[in-house]
Length: 422
Image (cartoon, rainbow, N blue to C red; front, side, top):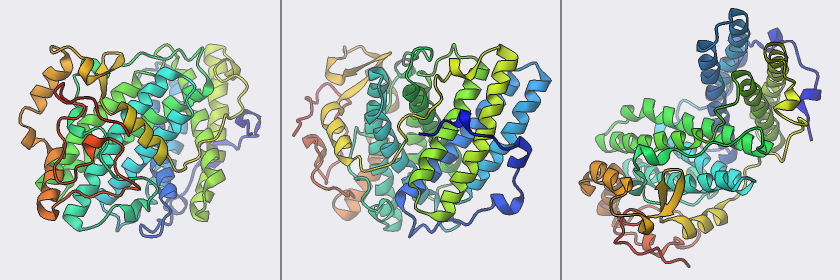
């Protein structure tokens, strides 16, 4: 397995790309393999996170020599982000792209959960997995309702489209989206990478919906983006809570660069599109240069060696996207009724009547018929007699199998008995 610290880095100045290089050949939205698109969306989010982290570091640093180092690396991260994000073709609509974003959220979260050694982090991943899974279902119904485009043509059966934990049940009090943080001095490197990756991915989804949601051409779509965008705020807060606040800025810089190297190397191994594969290879070499510079800065300004932050340096098991449908079904059948109780997770039926969950639900979902995620399904059912789904077999939760009426009580009210599992 590759150890990027043992690789000879290119000169940092040689990582600067010209305009012809950073404007790539876009993929075909009809022919692209869904996992190629998933990798593109994720790496766009990873590069956005690298840029935003660098800006925050810059704003909290009083040493202009160090700020110039950050500015140089950040400029390359920005070039990389443009190189990746412009792979999206002109003819792919924002909603079609959104289906890809939610596909990322489902298969990435499921893979990370299956490969996470820390049980608390795994619980957090499994919990949000069911919510992104439901978001895919809601957006897919909007796409079929407005454009008569069945989303299984876009995801090509790689992921099922069926209800998860209903979006209406996902709106929780801010007090209940704060998780406990993980001590990075003790955590497995897989845990550190998994947290960094999911924070970046969910943050990019949040940012995407914040900026494109109000551009949708009708009110129902604008409302759905607005609602799900607020759930993404919860997810970013939840995942961001897991990051170790005691890690220094330079330790975090090293971890960010190592994570980028790890992901580019992982995706280079599996990428079938030769055009995209060449981009992963190019960016990997650029990130190895960044990693070595980050290690030098850590040694210079904090007198720490990279081994103190990333013992050994050799990559763990590579991130490889694959079929996670059985895993998602298992978690859905077992955990659909879970909600948050401050740093913990509890079944809705186990909450007290005065819990903040019910107070917040009453505030935002006071009139159920005005909740956009419910309205989208109800409208699809009204026009097409049933919702849109793409299932291998019926939903594993009996309460979510009804296709002519949207379930707005599951995981939300104590009146709903625990979902029957099959």
